Length: 210
Image 1 (cartoon, rainbow, N blue to C red):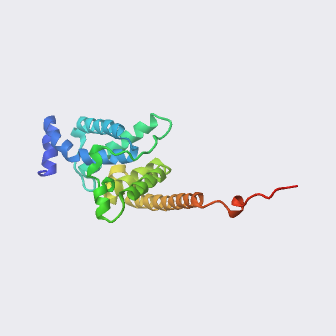
Image 2: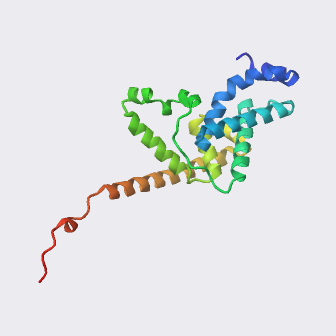
Image 3: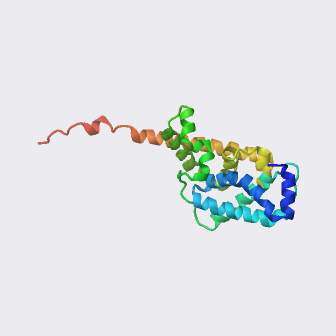
């Protein structure tokens, strides 16, 4: 895309020019929303609402240091997630159902898994475990980790997106990763215990009683 600042300025004068921004940021916005909801149809609806709100409020956007257009757009996406979950009393079940739009992401592509020397089924299992454990974090932690590790945003960009200090973002990442580590370790230990055979005593034949 040509100079983004010029494209934004053009779109602020002519709404039809907003299509350039839509084409550029649709995929990363969808990827972020899909990662947070685990549901392709919900993510599509939230993407539509995000870009609608962005177009409606584009005249208010002003480039400033430490706050890129992507940060501004993702701040709207985060707000849509908040609105969506507040309208329901609980989180949706997190699934690993693939959506066509997400195929560009390497962690969902079996061919990349094979190139890395990792079995695709094993990789999918790890992704499913990660999603289930992330669902146990609070919404703020989920937002931050998704922006950092799925959308690959820098700490300054995340701070701009969420209107938080960089130090606070780093603290949230540290605490969330530590909690994830504990959750995943506990999950693996539980799975290993369930897989262990029953005690030998349970398999011993009972002796006849007089």
